[in-house]
Image 1 (tube, helix red, strand yellow):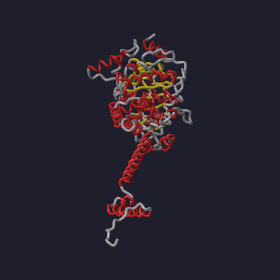
Image 2: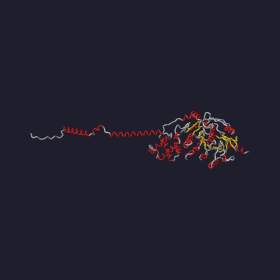
Image 3: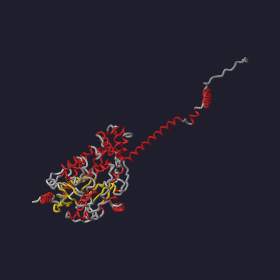
Image 4: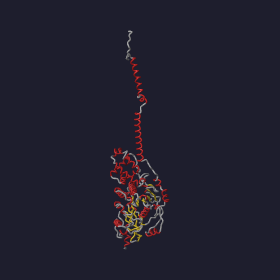
Length: 518
């Protein structure tokens, strides 16, 4: 048996699965596409997560677009993080060209132009369905990790949440949280300390600065109502295909803090909302995160640990997560070890550091007799990749150099009128794009402080009036205190007294001068 036949048999055996699977390309040996050595993607293990890596321009984004199409065909909903803005074309019909036709012929596959049901989502002011979450939904633990707080500061955040729960004050947006933080550090400090314990002014100041830092990256537009329900990401269209949700976050490339905040909240919400599923024949939702290094770029150690924990546990909910990045080393080792499917596009070696990264990358793949992995990584063409994945038993498949098929939808962005048309027809846009500002902690505390100020003014005015009443004499007092009136009263009094005594015979006699006629 020739080397080619041995290779072909090894690929067929390694990529033959019992459950439902989709063909994504064919194996390549010595530069030749072996059309009968098809490479299939088993849907059953798509919740084991994955990695799509490679240098700029090697085809990573088109690979995740192609995979999303096949998942949609299999009734699996998809969420795409569109950082570069070139995935919206999945909602439009593809247009074949000579290169595409030639590739499909080599792969022994049929090319059929298609368009897919898509929802355009946004975290900012771009056109699309607005995604929001309330501060309460984050909870004190997650919010503390996002803000990078220590244990003492995290305890104060937990105190704030408990206080708001007890007082029935919803924490919806960041202005609510800031208002409560200011309140417990000033007017409400004495009351809070009696009920919940001592409050450190230093801690409140630090937390406030951290929140303002998050605001500077545009977080105000993300926190609030109406809160997005993750169940709306897992919809099937009228044709029975999974809806592809394209989250357009092109304006978050320079705001990694906000991006990682959203991603962690989304993963945590999915984990909390979805029930345990065990082993499913296909996942309930698959999420592709393009430019994944943005999640980890400014993440604290506590935040990284939280992400790693969620990644480990969320697959039992039937949810798969795929990270797409230029360098596999961008992904923390704890997360990288959880990724069952690895698709490695070409890497470029321009420096000694680059060559070292390539050697490390090659060591992460199964050993093979058919390739020299370290050299092959730098020689892969556009739309080609090294692939290994977990089979249904959890065993890695043989490493394969694969020519991948191209997407069947448009490999370009949508025009503004096309985006407008999709958003106008969207039921989710009608549901979530209404601006809501419910009565929450900010309004309640503002009203409470206003009432307290008015009561204080009223009490002060009452005290002032009492003092004024005492200070201003009555008409009687004014007359009585007059010296002339007092003198007149004394004279009249003396006359009256003498008259009364005289009538009783008690008055004094007047002495008359004695005359001589006696």
